[in-house]
Image 1: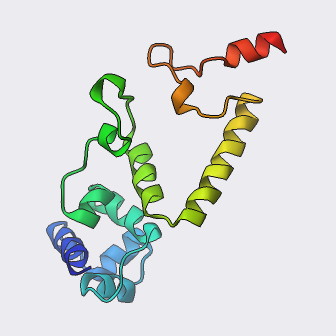
Image 2: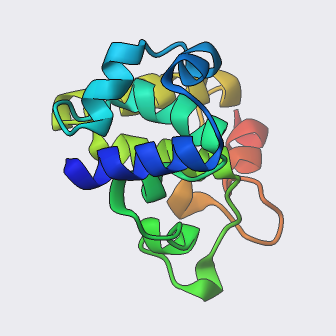
Length: 147
């Protein structure tokens, strides 16, 4: 926890921000920022998002001090099967990994409901049915033409 706080303090100072300025930019209270920087509190996902945006760094760096991991590695993929992720998509995956199992199940259920609603009965697993060449889920056209 101390390392995370130290990195946040270093990033704040490198940007030339006071805690008051960081409060203005992120909406986080100066007390909360101080508690994080001094290792008294662990930052939440809702704290990490605005901090990473203000500092122009990844949430990965704030949490680990390491440069952003390759997006394909966080998905357990090899380069030949890699898909391109935006920074927001990669951040969502990393934040999802920090959630407990109940929250993960809730997020996954909501995402699946939204996806199915948009796709009108799409297949069970988007990733396993996604083709790299055409970027469209397989079998969706088939399901629609046979309906």
